[in-house]
Image (cartoon, rainbow, N blue to C red; front, side):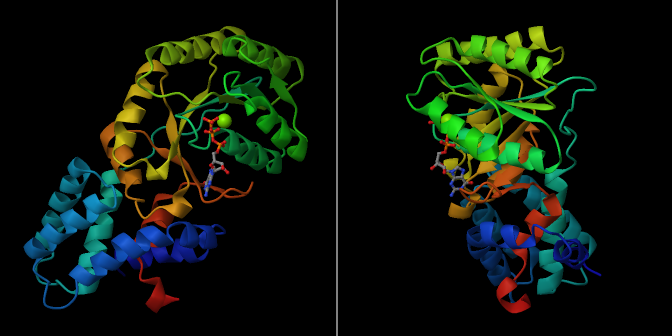
Length: 323
Ligand SMILES: Nc1nc2c(ncn2[C@@H]2O[C@H](COP(=O)(O)OP(=O)(O)OP(=O)(O)O)[C@@H](O)[C@H]2O)c(=O)[nH]1
Ligand SMILES: [Mg+2]
């Protein structure tokens, strides 16, 4: 049984199958289709394949270094299996090389042993932070957790009201500050509320900020510090919410955020609208940051946990012929 067959079994039984299929459809049409094309009969020479592979990977935002690593690994594997260079074998070896470049997720979500778990959501303007806070709250509610939201975006007019609307829909308390109030003081208040009300998960929305704006990054450092003063170990998870359309700029974006507030993972949003799903591999390989969740749309349940096998199968498999 080939590698792709082995992950197909898990894929077929997974409840998020349809969302992955639809959400990665554009990436599949871009990368998957090209991979199948370049591995057609007559091009079964691994070295020739690799030149075209490199271009296809970079076009889907895998990033140069990561693409190079995948190609080298692929060539080593192809060398080992030199006798069998069929199209299926090529695709299998490539899937294995892509799997290997992502590696293990060694940063599991951290939950406080006692008291509230604090999740801090950061990112550039419009990346999907506020919507993702609501989607996450929805997931934790479904698990039976007691959830609260902190509206620490006191900068953009209407930001607090946006989160409050989600709070009403979800029936979740929203701890909010006034416009232009110091966001750190909102977080302090929210942490105190969470402790006093036995909240399990406190999700903190923050204002969008460009990673190059020094004063806003210093503000983020402060937010990070103050929550730890009220709840030891908080924030337990700091996740960068990134638009999957960001392109390779996303890597430097994540790098700069990581310098101000230690990131524990990435949430990639708007995957439904991009053919550049290769960014997942680039972020993990370049920065060691795992992708925790993927946003597949604007609705509350359009947020799915990232699963490497599901991802690879969705972007590579030939669904037109298979399903
Ligand atoms: N298609 C799609 N749209 C999304 C997704 N996530 C968020 N959006 C949309 O992106 C837009 C911006 O989302 P927000 O949650 O307001 O983004 P934000 O990061 O909080 O924005 P600022 O607070 O202004 O920095 C909204 O129209 C969302 O509905 C997604 O996964 N897919
Ligand atoms: Mg927002």
